[in-house]
Image (cartoon, rainbow, N blue to C red; front, side):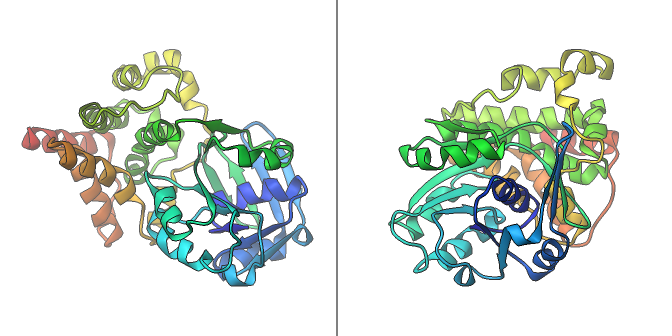
Length: 336
């Protein structure tokens, strides 16, 4: 069962269905109607093109309609985690494997508290998915799926391997989650820029904005004795410095960072465009909370969260690189 049939959930569930799994997507009628009518077309930046007919999966608007499941993937927005777990309570059998494939820190703990009889594992999807009309879901960046190590996953290993989702187990998933949060701090910058990810990251001023918020986040993590895993070619501390170099140098030294489909945008940009609430509280908000816990101001992340909040409430504007950089530098100066 995939609980949360958005872009990520449909892509991951679709790959599992293509590998022969009995998949039920639980989500909103609009998405379910689209994929039921059109089936799925799963493409990626590496050239793969997989078709999954509508007869290869089931759909339901609630978990209660989905029936029993050996494996539940929760892919709802972080703000809906508690609701989703309560929806599963009383439906899933003891010992059912439930994996949180969500942004942010601590969603698995929320689920575990509500579903104590299940095997609840944290996880993260390390790639971006773009939804096109007609049931097409396109993986626009490299990456696989990270999951907390557990022997229970062995029984799903053949299916996961056949799916091509590149699932890797980590004994210390928390360090991976913090590292992914660092990378996801680009989501609000991308959303405010109004540009595709590759175009935004190719611009030095936007990268300087990212360097400011990542530097502040790393300082807060250091004070909290959190060591994020290394998910990029260079360690996080080195990558922060590299973000500020001229564009030509960045392309030469960190070209893999720009290995992104030209149309890919952040999920936060999609949320703002659709008038949905974003996950800013689980990104910049997480850094603000961490800073408060260790007694360290985090004005840059706080200001970026305010700008996204304003956009959610209708104050939409496209920020140029120099404008956003000046705004965040002013926040850093005021906070210092």
